[in-house]
Image (cartoon, rainbow, N blue to C red; front, side, top):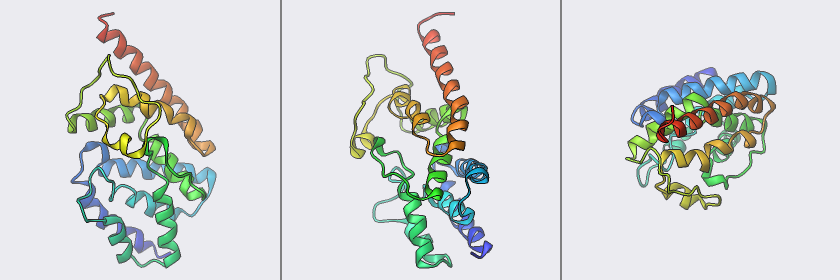
Length: 211
C-alpha cells in the first residue's frame, strides 16, 4: 500500500475528531495508534490496515455522526485502496465497539489488535479521565449510590442509557481486562485495571467521608 494513503486519511479525519468532546478527540486516536503499534510489534499483522482502521474507527460513531451521514464510507471511497482493503478495514472497525458487550468478535489479527488498542485507552488513568469527560459532556452524574449496574444490555439499551459515570465503570470499563484478545493487550490491561480499582476504592472512601 502507498504510504501516502495513510497520510491522506490522517488529513481527512483529523478535522472530524477535533469537533468531538475530549473523550473521543484527536488525542484519543493518537493514543490508540501508539497502543496498536506496540501490540503489532509482538503480534504481527498488516500495519497499514491497522493504522487506517484506527484512524477511521470513530468517525461514524453513532454518538457523534449526523443523521444521514457516514464519514467512514465517504472517506474510504476517496482513498486509493482496493475493494478488498476497504472491506478488510470495514470488518476491523465493525468489531471494535463494545455495544453493551454484544459486539461481533474480530476474526483477523488486525481486528484483534485494533480492538485491544482502543479498549486499552478506555481503562487506566486515561480511561478514568475519558469517562468523566464524556459524562460531563452529556451532563451525567458523577455517581449515584442508588443506581444498579446493568449486567445484560442490548446495543440500544447500552447506547441510550443515562447512568452515572461511576456506574459506567461496572457496566463496561471493569469488564474490559477479561475481554482483551491479544497476549500483549492482556498484559497491558493488568496495571490499568488495578489502577481503576484503586481509584474506585479511594472515591468510595472520600464520598463516605472516610480519611
